[in-house]
Length: 372
Image (cartoon, rainbow, N blue to C red):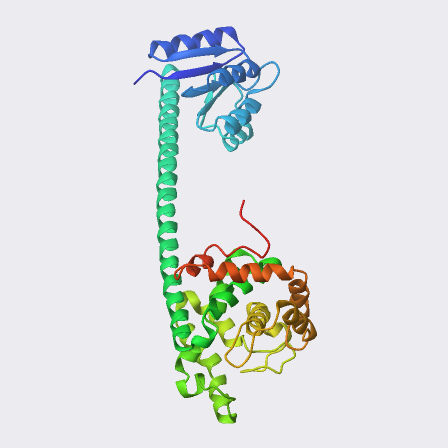
């Protein structure tokens, strides 16, 4: 057997010397102490022992207390109790507290060798298991990191595809070009101001960006009509909410965002469409979006009218609080500086064509904020 380091804790000098002699004869390196306190000091100075062999009854702290300390601070070191106490309850207590064997005095040389052999093998397996567990944790951590990176790349790819879907609508309706980008940025900023967390923020951003995707199925004769729509045309136009929902909900990573697409024309007082939802029955993202959408609609130029000022738009949103909009979200919206919305509009205008997809993973700055 390869040489092992064994710490002996025994207050009787004769027994201590006997254990040292027998173990060293078998080729082991021993360190002998006469009480638990000295043993702990030895372990603190050098914890690299293969086995601790300890008596129970000793001056000061007893062997079972020493066992508790070793089990807590040095769990890889096996402990064998060597005592004259022939009591089942004491032995059971020792095993429950972490001892791996119980050697009764007086013992034979064969009994000692057998106990030491089992204890050393137990310690070897403990260390082997600890190494295996450490290596396994390292492998799991590495693979988890790779999986997370892959998922992030996949999510980024999805968002680029999502952006292409939104841009396809802008290509059909030049009148509202850039609307999806601006309203998404406004929605993100407002959602952040009321404390929406990152994961939900991504869902809301995607829903906001795709809110009008159902209009891809709307005939050009209606979508691009320069004048007012008649009743039948308006009915067809209003179908875009449900059409968009049916398109988006089939994509697994957009299933939650689809609810915002479905509900983005609902009103807080229940007079909206397509389902006439009211109050908190309307998804939070849709209630936030409604304010952002109105803000952009009022402040953007159209061929038939000039966009209004942000001050006027904010006043109108305040007037419609409790009717079209959620009063609590309106309150948060009005608490944000008006000039910050113009800054955000300008920031979005300077984004490259493929720039918005990154905002779904790292939302644009809230108005008035700058990165450190």
